[in-house]
Amino acid sequence: MCGIFGIIAKKSDVAKKLLIIGKRLAYRGYDSAGLAVYKDGVIDLRKDVGTIDYVIESLKLAEMKGNIGIGQLRWSTFGKPSKINAQPHFDCDGDMIGAHNGNIISYYETKENLEKEGHNIISQNDGEICVHAIEKHYDKEQDMIKAIIGGIAEMEGAFAFVTYHKDSPEKLYAVKMGSSLVIGLGEEETYIASDLPSILPLTKKFVPLNDGEIVELTADSYRIFSVKDGSEITRESRISDLSAEDAVKGDFDYFLTKEIYEQVDATEKLAYGLESDVLDSLVEKLAKADKVFLIGCGSSLNACNVGSYYLNNVAGVLAIPVIGGRFFEEYKDYDPGDTTAMLCVSQSGETKDIINTINFAKPKGYHILGMVNVPGSTVERMSEAYAYIGAGIERSVPATKTYTNQVLLFLILAARVGHAKGKLSDKDFESLKDEIHNLSKLVEVTVKNSDERAKKIAKELSKINAMSLLGYGVTHGVALEGALKIREINYIAAEAMYSSEFKHGPLSIVSDGYPVIYVVAPNDKYYVISHISEVECREGRPIVIAEHIDGLDKYVQEEDYFEIPKSSQLISPILAVIPLQLLALYMSIERGINPDYPRNLSKTLTVD
Ligand code: M6R
Image 1 (cartoon, protein in one colour):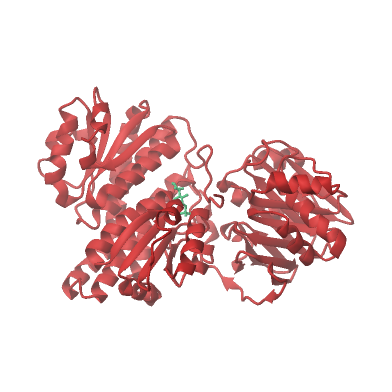
Image 2 (cartoon, protein in one colour):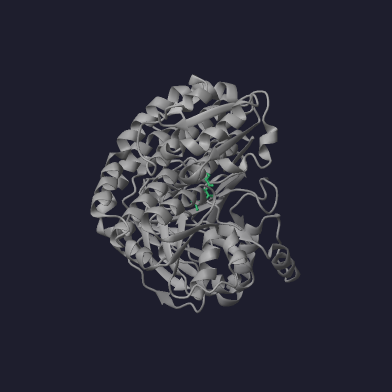
């Protein structure tokens, strides 16, 4: 997805710093890059199709001089990737420059109206529409805030936009209308960017923004205004505890490898928070709810699938996982009363499907709760109570450590709620607590033990274009997550389902070495053995991920058994996902794919 960014500074060296931010937004996915820097009455615009390194090198972006500048990384939606469609864009007379992130769904209509009024629109890109719509109002108002308010009224869509005008080159403006945007405060310079991790090497001081807000930045101040009526909004800055170092590869070839290994630390840190009072408010709200919808997309949805098992079985709370984009269709006539909660799970806290669901559910009376990784994100700010999954920055497009910490946080919440409600005795709570505190050691053993085996099997599986993954009970979500990882970075068909469902049709695919991966929790041996033998006796290739379970090895070749450390029914799904992440990673490398940046995808999906 596109990334936008800007800096206004006292010194004339913004270009190099803009590139620091731009490079850190590259993980979101893009095909073109551009910068526009102002000095002495001239806006210098340089942009092109290609990687950010290519554009920096070929257009000498680092040499641009000026104390105000904006930049954009474009992921094409309206208009094919080309130099002219790359952003930023000028207005008609070259006095104003702007770039957007998101989609203007009224693109054709707004463009036609603006052209009828004489605007000269030269690209096929919707970002240019934003510039001209604001220009139209600036010509009348001669005031950027009023012009932005007027311009926005001309367009429909979900986006964020950053701009400046030659008339006031000491001020940078931006507006948030559905896509993520955050202000950063430095020493005699101020930043705006699509996400917080991108500005961390420059500052840890940030100001979160809500939809419907315009910002006016100078090198040492920020002001926020409402799009509704232009009134000023006061908001304090915050200090982020995320670390900028989290976002570099270090000795690893890929962010994905690093992030799989970082699960040891991430789970350890989160487990410390088990007794922390920062969870009190969320625990209290969940304990009061008689029903909770768990809303997520992709990996976060898969975490909800395991989470619903925990909440139902450990906490005694009826928990129903629902796809982010499905809720408002499926439950449009449902009356939540006063005791229905909605726990929105999102790494970025910016996913549009989730925000749409919250916008639908909040006015109906659902208690909105959040589970996010990015502090200050939109989901956090829309929630009555929330918790951080504390996985640190995740750069690779495939979710790994954030998925694992979401599942662990579900277990922690279920334990706390179950104990608070008396469903879990003191003794059982203490023993679950010990298991959670011990988890990171088991994660470490699992990563180390699975690595070589995954590499070896990956060599064979990377030649195969389809496979099935099966889970049962608490491991169903793990199978779903494993299949998503394999599909996402291998471009093959990997389907996941409940293991008892396999015989109801899909079994017909099995013959001649077809791989079927079983994820088995310790107590489920007796249900799963018959499912495995159905495949084994039809010449399929069962691969098993489980702790040592007597008798299971009879159905599987020794080299196809990923033996994870002994744990318990509740802990085992957190370990079992690791061999699948490694398998997906090594298969992808075998195929010559960069697993950090799979084609067509982006890390944060702020569009419908
Ligand atoms: O930021 P979110 O957790 O809301 O993102 C949801 C999905 O887009 C995300 O989990 C996606 O499925 C993963 N990148 C897949 O690995």
